[in-house]
Length: 128
Image (tube, rainbow, N blue to C red; front, side, top):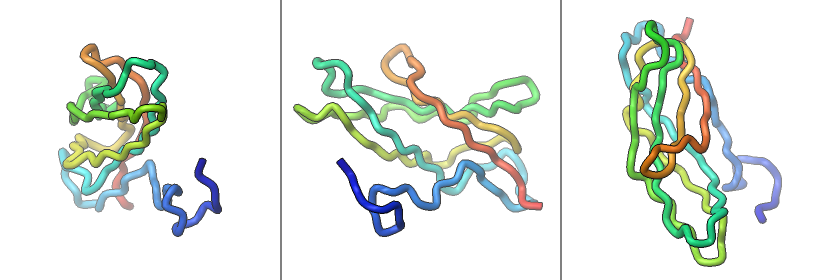
């Protein structure tokens, strides 16, 4: 169990986390985000599962034709230690492609059938 005050000195606190990416007014689309990360905590509810594969799909929700996949990051593996059903992981999403301003959904998928297990939303906008 992690205890302590919420502060930059506590390594278990996510400080500076934002769900809005503000790009310079003169940025042309498509472009890539300079630095995007996914923070996840996994709970192993299957006694026989030791390693689980995950992928992250980034989807632009405000595309001209509806949803558009912009980036896909396959092959992330989470290994559970014996007797510890909880695993926390951080993944960097290098060169996360964005096609325009608006809402994006990051979809965490599991297994060979790409079962959706979690989703998070971000917004991309230009500075005014």
